[in-house]
Image 1 (tube, rainbow, N blue to C red):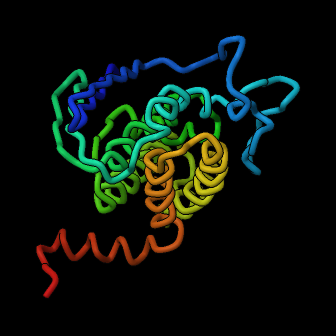
Image 2: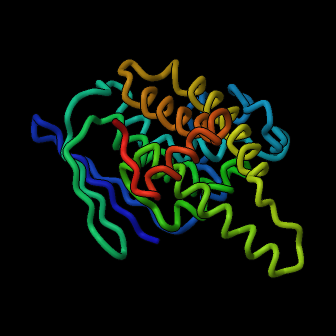
Length: 224
């Protein structure tokens, strides 16, 4: 997986980020205080401070956070995303593009709590809507259960594990938001993480209603 995000601002500024299919195993010698593991460490983090100096998710997010920390979330940007298969392009609010980019960065960071997102990152969909996020999350989880059944394991067709997974992700998102809050003068990074948090919440708190909406659409029904 090789993905490039290219941002073009209305004042003609440009910035690119490239994400390769590798995980960060160690951080450089010197990183900002907010990336240290003990700084706003997630309440469900399994990493030990004696073994890990830095939060892998924070280190992965650092280049993006630094570039956009003073930017307004709602400014319009032209974003081009190129992967090994196709090119996506959209003019949108900066926060929407950052939500996709930061989500991809976190999934590939090596954080054990975010590792469940790696399969979705392999088939990354930039600018995904909430409905698309639900569809992809549920589809990917059910496929995992199918393979579990084929391997004589007990499948979870009720999606209980998916709900629990996203409840864990909410704790991670909250802690990451706290990490970057103090270093961001603009709200672009913060809004992006809040939107990411909102999507995870939709799986945890309203999955049944979200599935009913998708069922109606798959039956070809439309809202009045």
